[in-house]
Image (cartoon, rainbow, N blue to C red):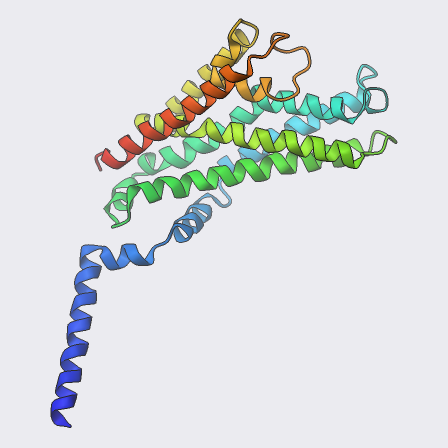
Length: 278
């Protein structure tokens, strides 16, 4: 009996020392930390920040602006033009300008704040793979894009009902949900390259200035031949866009450009994020 107790005690001590060793080496910690834990942590860090509210307000003001245009101006009318034209005006403004502003401000803030607030040293010292850290942040941005665009559709529809007696049919709703779903995918594919510049420059303001340059090029390149080869025109040109852009949209060029910039962005950012010095 005494020997059994001794053997059991030795076994417990061995297990404890093994766990302690793994904890010191980071293996035990890394095993316990899941992507979901990192995602929740990123959400908590972002919760209640002024940048999040600014990003949301940019999209809200976009919808309110279009609502007042239809409510106050006889030039625009849902009763005359239909629901699809009303939603198209919202989609154009988001895809051409305000969507980029909202998503890129938030993206640059999430990735650059670690360096500006000097928390990246402690963050990178944790025994968690840097690729997991990167994708947990990216997942937060993707969730924001999806939720914000769906809420933009719902808010636009609710406000539109106050200024028209024309019914919002099931066919229109499904058609618009398809458009907004494609917008979610296209805007999401443009995010990785933005994260690369935010991490590369390690500051919020220069990253925003760079993204403003990207958006300004939209004004120049939207009407030239081969415009779809500039990936930031693709969300606009692949959605209802009225008279903006050229009459002919070269779809294969847009697919190639946006897929290329997505793959390139992931390659560059993962390579730099994993190898970046503390």
